[in-house]
Length: 341
Ligand SMILES: [Zn+2]
Image 1 (cartoon, rainbow, N blue to C red):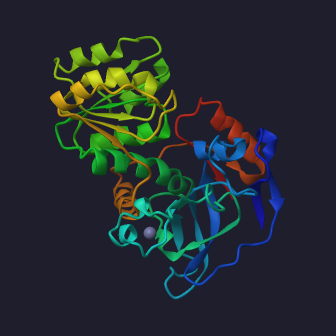
Image 2: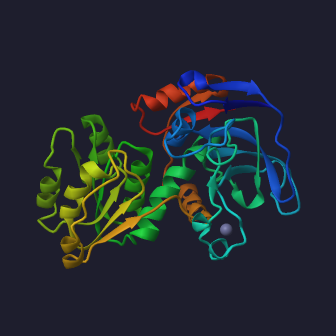
């Protein structure tokens, strides 16, 4: 089969399409013919390398995958079924897996990060990772949603327990995870505020449902602005993956009983947490990574019903994998870069 492979970390030339042996389906696995695979920042880290993390090279990247079942065993879906894949791989038998918290499994891994992913014509994955594609979505749209929507859903719904009527601030609204968060918060009947890095991204956030988006690069006092906009009540939830640059302002903006939920720290990870503010205001600071397969299936139902929409910026053929990486790296995209096969 043809596959995009990273043999050594490096620049855009460190990923190339090669002819490699087909994956062999083991018992309990399904072989899927890949039709679309969406890129994430993880694909860039896999290519460039990430300090403190050892990728298993050579590696086929790509965790957001949609395709057609090619071959399956007793527990799998029929060959010919249109599917999307769960990006998280877990043991399936431990206490956490058995309790539906597969993302907490001590053997949890992610396709394209800890094992070969979907930037290839074929991929073999555990049967439980294979789900029927929502028929309303085409293959690029079905590949565009799992990682971002799952991450945002787990943060808002499971970890921060979003409720109707709450006010939510979503940082870095131009990103895939935050765009998904705006949609999910709106679906839950929350009032949404957002920060973004340019006037265009602010306009898009407002078009997607944010009441007001502020360009934090031009308004360093965004925290006070939002405080005024909430009639000095503050917000119930701050949704973040920026980290250090926005932590203090976010904590100040949280109302009593509020929750700061984070899945990343692109501006820096070491912050100062004033405990007095934490206990007097009954605040929660909550971490989150990925989400469960059950949550992913819930999201798929909302997508099928048209209550959530994946966002595809543009598609590239597999042969243009380097150009697809370059497009993602430019940060001028809004929505996913999807590689089609
Ligand atoms: Zn497990």
